[in-house]
Image (cartoon, rainbow, N blue to C red):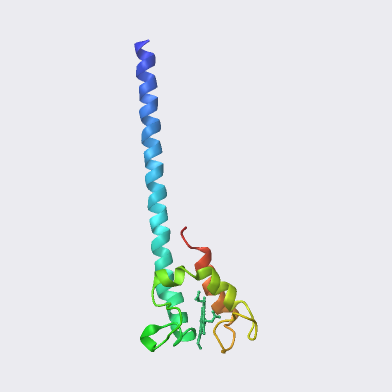
Length: 119
Ligand code: HEC
């Protein structure tokens, strides 16, 4: 009986250790993904916004439309950005406003970034 109790508590402790380890690594993975998402914003999305959504969405450039000047402000409307850049010039809501449509490669950059968002 003693052996049985010992064995059971041993098993339970192992299960607890494994459980807490897997939770920790899931959290670590999520923060790694988050860091990668921020890095992709800095390296690919930010330059694209500076080139194509300026000056209207950049207050520093005198833009008066919704600001897209940091990670959070762009992430907050990311789905709407993708929807709008996939429209065609002349369609209601098309962006960049009164300019030509982004190239397929540029649209793909936004879509990839949105797809890798950490919820
Ligand atoms: C020439 C100015 C101009 C440029 C360049 C421009 N926009 Fe806009 N943007 C506007 C105006 C005006 C509005 C408000 C009208 C509307 O909502 O359609 C707007 C609104 C938006 C909104 C909705 C914001 C909200 O209030 O929720 C999004 C999203 C957006 N633009 C994305 C973009 C993206 C992405 C680019 C670059 C690829 C871009 N825009 C480039 C003028 C511009």
